[in-house]
Image 1 (tube, rainbow, N blue to C red):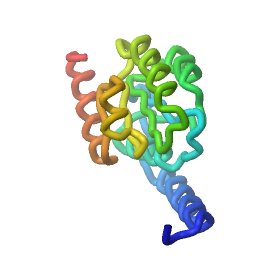
Image 2 (cartoon, rainbow, N blue to C red):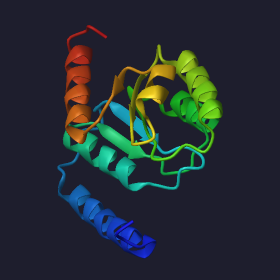
Image 3 (cartoon, rainbow, N blue to C red):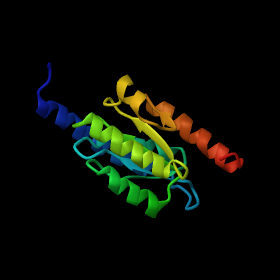
Length: 161
């Protein structure tokens, strides 16, 4: 309530430009690096967190691609089939219809969780929502994400996953 919408949007634009610049400073990721994809859901216009997730994962030596905001969950299923990532993330800042999201998301998880690690984050994942969905990891911070991604790679290279 202390800031106007234009101030929040301007701040998001500044941080978005900074993440783009920081991305160019991250050393290139090897072609054989594990793949990660993700983004935001339909009805959630925010993209900044997903850009930050991709940047953190690239820095952790993942071949990470943000698919952007507003992607329907069924389309993520197509992306998982086509891209075959090792990690899939959702950053959700707002939910338009919690029940609809939970049902669609759990179907996606049930169909693909044996192929990819599902990682969730974002302010819309309240305790109540987290209790209703399944996931491999919920990340409150980018540091949690980095730790999980590093652990996942070490398990994969060690043959445990």
